[in-house]
Amino acid sequence: MNKKLSAVFASVIALSVSHAFAGGEIAVIVKTTNSTFWQNVQKGATAGNKEVKGYSMTFQGPAAESAIADQVNMVENAINRKVAGIVLAPSDPDALIPSLKKAWEAKIPVVLIDSMISDSGKSYYQSFLATDNEKAGELCAQELISKVGTTGKIAIMSYVAGAGSEVGRVGGFKKYIETHSKLKIVGPFYSQSQMATALNQTTDVLASNPDLKGIFGANEPTAVGMGRALVQSGKAGKVVAVGFDGNQDLQQFVKDGTLSATAVQGSYQMGYLGLKTVAKILEGKPVPKFLNTGVVMVKKSNIELPEAKNVLY
Image 1: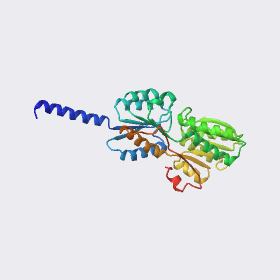
Image 2: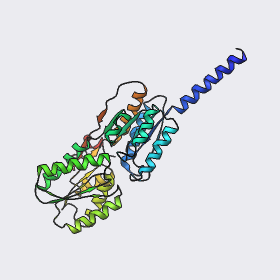
Image 3: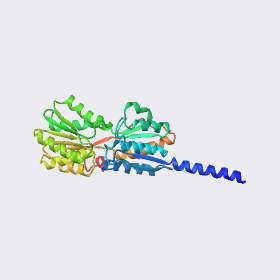
Image 4: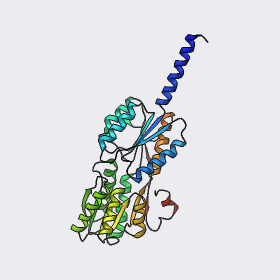
């Protein structure tokens, strides 16, 4: 081989290696890393990545779900380092759209999990994997009505106003309550997904509404704070409480009767299927625009059964 051919060959090898290195990462970016829900998403994504050949995986999220600008920067950085694909749980329905447009222009496939973005961004992602949050909210409303009846007063402890999952979940809950009962709703109150905030808000709600019959905590940190407030105020088991998500704290609250039930999402499935869906897109295979990852209503009666154990974390 002459020197010129040898140099060309070497440059082609170097180019293909550098391209493979630059294009070999799938970035998983969630709402926060400080939550067992998102850590369970990470477990699923890691398992999915083991079944996908040729791609490494990175996992990151801001310190808090309300740190939207930090999440935007993480997506921008992923695009700038030319990742192969992105799995994203957007913290805000609008703030991420300019970044997703950049990913689309750079031909980087994006799979959304957990929360939707606004309609104006629908052409910039390839698939959305999530709980049907509106349906999940309805299930929580049905559970509460079955225990408290159709009259009286209930409270909604929510998390981040306007987040895609919150709009569907709390919207579905409220709509069902208003359509199928005469229950008066107090709230919603927004914890910003901070457990301590939810605890303080719930304590105040219980104190100012001594006739409260039921209460709904709409995500993991909110429901944990709500449960702790019920215990501390001596209202556990007296005010009917329905939570959302399934970490160790919430499982214990179900077992001891603080929570009547908690609706548990397929968080592991979101990570696992999210990773696998990006890989399918990169292989040129068709993927569904929406995939429902399901919800299980976990109660004392089924918490030890496989249907619950498969989603609890």
